[in-house]
Picture 1: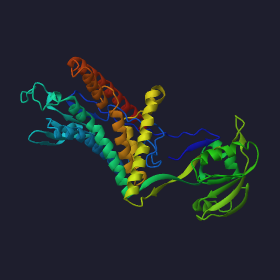
Picture 2: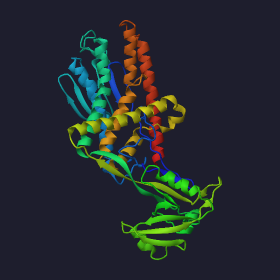
Picture 3: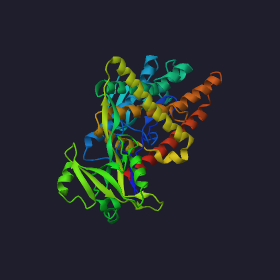
Picture 4: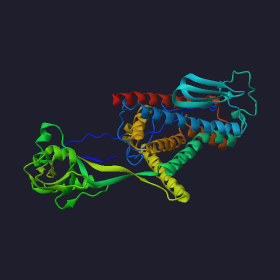
Length: 447
């Protein structure tokens, strides 16, 4: 994401956040994923696809990208639930239903033992076991193939299989990305882009008085060359602030269209001009920064980095695996660091939580920005989902694993059913309330 900074005025820039859906479950017998129950968790500085996350607004003029984002979420849900389902079936454990989505069913198939459902709202899913309905006379409660009657290790495998599936799928997604479109990274061009506010104050600013216009690119401030590096905005700001009330020569590149439109009226402060390699014009403008309230120089514009997405391709199979592992570790580290911030400083980070509305909005922007966006979006949601679900919180997979650990510590004696059910039901209600609150807040923010 380009780094925005204001020089001489307040800048309002969105800081999109990426959160990880949680997976509430109704009982030991029902492994259930609801993207609305817990917002995705990640630090606000997450870079998706080398800075491709442009904002939280859904552009309705691009419905394809919105549908793609929803489709990616549906596939990730299906992968998570397929992990639970496969772990159960491969161990001979009975399963009653495999469902992707919530709400009314739009497709249903009844197999010999399992019912498969595709529901209208694809932001969730679940695997239901016969244990969920103790009144069903078709199943013997003492059946050794019921989940509740299996050893702790087998139950733990079924519960953790969703997380394992998401981790494996994230790695495979990144492997497909590196093998096809390569590794996407943010690369920088020399200079910083300028926006002169279309306000009376902006038109009277030091930059405007010197002839600087929106769309110009500042290449040099005095003796300071603006580098093609992440520090380009801070470098430019420091050079401007260092010259309060003192004239400084600013080298500006003006794109060809703007240069043609300006004709010869480039401003009385222009000392010289030449042509740039891109067909535009390079101007040497004499600018006198105003003295700000803090004593530093200010010219009254907004500056942003000049970035583009650079693709790096692997030279062979060995490098494909190495680059895939590196990218996986980078994204996993980003997610885990974000979780650490939320756990250790929840009060300050709670505002960074978002629900499925914001996830789809951000995902649609990512998918429109670059060919690697689809892969990056899918990978980081998978990693987020795995990281959040393994937390030892009620109604998450990690909460069930924690109860299994308590059962093992008690020598295999299960906790009282009422206590177990109360813990999970309470957690489910809290996550559902949080999810609904996030949906409402994110929807309001997008209006």
